[in-house]
Every structure is written in structure tokens, then in C-alpha cells.
Length: 315
Ligand SMILES: [Zn+2]
Image (tube, rainbow, N blue to C red; front, side, top):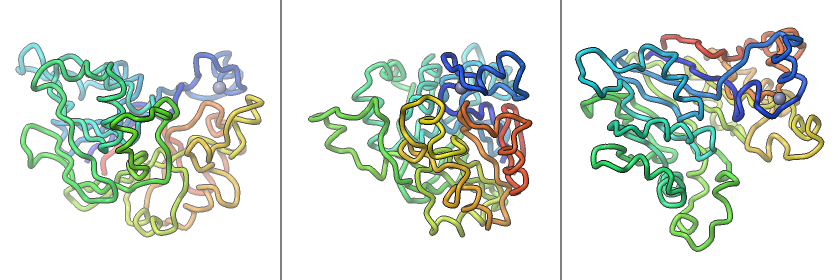
């Protein structure tokens, strides 16, 4: 399985357009040694011919332009894409906005839970742009806490064996408070945020968990059996945003376990010896973005890595 990291920042990217935090100001001025990052986007391929997108970032258009593997192929006419499917693991803006970049009448399979699909197709009519022609978007059920076949290609046998993990979490704020609608009635909280474990044909596994509010002990053996872990690196501290902005929510309230602290992910994942551990979905306020920070050294000392845009590896 080929894995391409096309973006590694949390929502807003790095730097974020309206943010004057130390990191964002510093990367603009050159005063902080750090690499700018697009919003988190991962693409995977089981055969190098067909690709599956894990979520659809608001930066998706430029991420596709930057990746020759995702361009129209020769000899396929004037409309073509190797992108066969998209898996939507939650309804956050930075996970779904990129679907609108894929609206150009291209056949596409979109996997989402029933509740997330309802938010997108019933409550937010702009996503009907994906359904103007009969063979455009095909919505597929993304089951919670189950194994399923993730199709990626022109034949049903093309694709991945995949497991989904339901993560404690809520639907995004923009989708809250819509009462009386079909979707609100049908909403099932275990369909709000999912993690994925993808299996390669050779038996190696990739875990994709960019939004983890709570790390369950029962997942640890499952994660230790993975070859690579792409894990929630949004915030360093639980009170990071409150400290920097003077207001707001804690990391956990926003659906992200912080990296640091006794119950943080660095400690909780320290016992996993098998997988390559990579933090992704890093918020622009997170000190690990600063290459000279002690926080970045602590991550490295714990044997974990911090994803960069453009990383490309085989599983
Ligand atoms: Zn910032």
C-alpha cells in the first residue's frame, strides 16, 4: 500500500489566515524555524493505479495539483481521475469541504456513516453539487465498529480490507441544534467520529486516527499490531487554545487528546513498540511545529514522528 501525506495541519492550516500566534507569526516572518502545512489529507493506493482519499480537505485542489499520481491518466479521454473513492471519517469542515472540489461530474464512491451522509446531503444543500448527474457520487455506508471492504477502482475486488473504530465524539458545531430534521432524529453518536485501520494485501496495517477525544485502553493491542499509526497531534496541551486566545475550549472538549501530560497520547502510546508512530493533524498553535522547540525534542525522544506535507511511503 502506498501512503501519501498531502497535508498534515489541523483545520485552518499553518499558518492560519487570521492567526497571529507565535507559530503563525513566526513562520510568516521567518522568526520561527517551521514548515508551512496544508490541512490534513492522506491518499492511499493498493496498486498505484487507483487512489482512495482519507477525508477531503479544504486544500484538496492544490493537493491534487501537487501530486502527479492523482492527475488524469493518459489515454483515458478528456475526463479522468485515478481517485476512485473517498472515506469521510467525520463531518468537520476540514474533513468534508474538499468534496466540493470533486464536483466536476466525476464518478466517485463516498464512504460515510449514515448520520454524516445525512448532515452533508440533507442538511447542507451545497453538497448536492455532487449529485447533479446519475453516475456522479455514489454514497456508500461506512459502518461503525465493523470490518468492511473499501472499494477503490473500477472492479469491486479492487480495494482494501478495512476496520472502523467508533471514537467518542460529537458532530461538529455547525451541524448541531438542527431539531426536527430527519438527520437529527437518526443521529447516532457512535457515527460522529470514526478511526480506520486499513489492511494491505501482505497483512500490514495502517491506523488513521486524526480525531481522538479519548484513547481507549482496549484499542492499544489493536494499534500495537499496526505497521504505521497516523495519530491525532492537534494540540500539545489541553488548555493550549485557551492560553493562546484567552478564551475557547479545551483540546478534549474539541475532540482531541493532547500530546503532553500524564494522560496525553505521548505517554499513552509509549508502550506500543511495533508501529511507526506519526503525529498528524497538527494545529498551528502546537509548539511541536517549531523545529527548535523542546516539545518537538520530547516527541522525538519518545520515538514518535511529526508528519510533513509530501511524505510518501510504502506499507
Ligand atoms: Zn496560529
